[in-house]
Figure 1 (cartoon, rainbow, N blue to C red):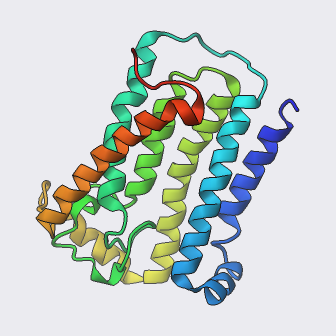
Figure 2: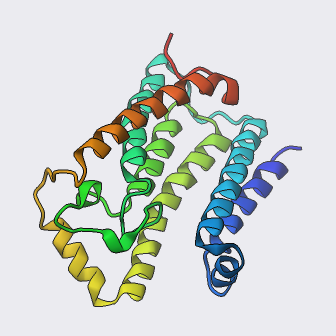
Figure 3: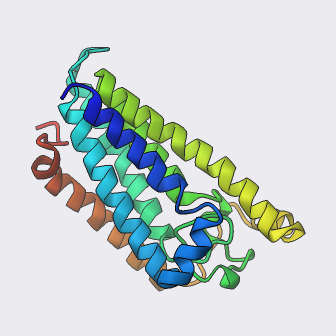
Length: 223
């Protein structure tokens, strides 16, 4: 099949991420599915297309850009722990600045949690995942895939900021200034919840290491 499947998977990936969130399609989908239903369907579709894209990259013709060394395995192994912790701390928490949160109206800039350091935690986690995985995958298809994912995360942050500024008006700048004015090490709004989320993040990290050989055919461990 050559590069055809890889190109098709990439095209579908960007279409499924761009079209459903743009007006007038998004309001229609939310009206038909409900806000929660839209989020669930959109998330499931995103995961399926992402899985297809990863498989398609593995099937694409191998074109070596740089050699592989044992040290490269440690780069994603180290980077994925903070990425998993970021995901665990961010999902479902109030965040009026980005996606992946819940109940943005409950956001307290005096207790911003992870948002004190980053407006878009899930995009930061995606960028960590993507950039770290470029290092041990020195072939053209995987460099294109992970490199574009990293660029997608950075571009997505700017696009979301632009949209949120438009939607929130002057309140966006006020909230952003308030969350940045907090202490460098802010205390969590719910310490017990934060601890449980950190434990869940470590669990996610361990689960990904465990299933990686079965899903992608290669162990992420150096031994």
